[in-house]
Length: 407
Image: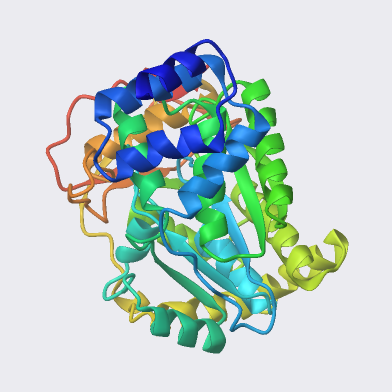
């Protein structure tokens, strides 16, 4: 029967929910093999999926595990998800801003698998920080602090996790239908009634083609509507790293500077855009009112205070946060203007320095990473420091031409 279903999809025919459940639930239960599911995923990549097939797949993913109940909170939780980026420390900043404005955030995040760390890796660079919270601890902190970021439990959409792991090694990560199903099944199972999805676009993002980005946004909003969730999508660029840092502890320190209202620029504006949407949804107010609340939380120190409260609640010690690594410098070899800082190249350098992992159990060096000392548009002279590298590994030869574009 599985061969018939694979063949049916290969010829572009619409599958029933029963057929989708037969294949995917069979895979979760060990009755279907990796090579069978791989053939099916490739057929989906070639022929795509219709809206109802996607809605059905999301439901199958959700029902493969537990669904979190956040009804104990007096107001609806607003969640945020990013499709991934280089130097993307927005969750740390946005969470504190939004929670300080009275909109609770209960977020389950993952460790990064790839060139750079995920939100959990960034938080674990704070000495003592705990991410494996019990349901009771999540509930108590959500009520008292209004901001919780914890590890994804094994019981939340386990089918999606298993399918994603196979997609990651089989060249099937670019299917927009599968991306949308994966994102939204986790968000809906996570219990939030409202959510903002930050869709990254560009060379350092999962999707580079604007058509694919637009379709992903459309599908995410359709899935939200189908499941009676309020969903907004925001498209942001990932052609260059977001902010000045790439690396776990380095990104936490940069997030702190933003929360202390010491930084201006693209990172701040991206965070304000996302926070504005979340506050507007959570409080049912206009974007103009919500943005003013977000700005006030930064200017009065409320966001920074909320971040400190959140870190302390999860047993982190910000006073002990240090960068303990050797420093190396990338210097300009010619005069000119920085035309580009390539996100993908930056991510690969950060990985070489120790900031990322290939396998889920690989160790990460929390101090490893890059600080960009110059930004796009800066004029430079030979010998100027373009970036500072932090690592505890022997420094390999680096192709700077692939990192900076200078004209």
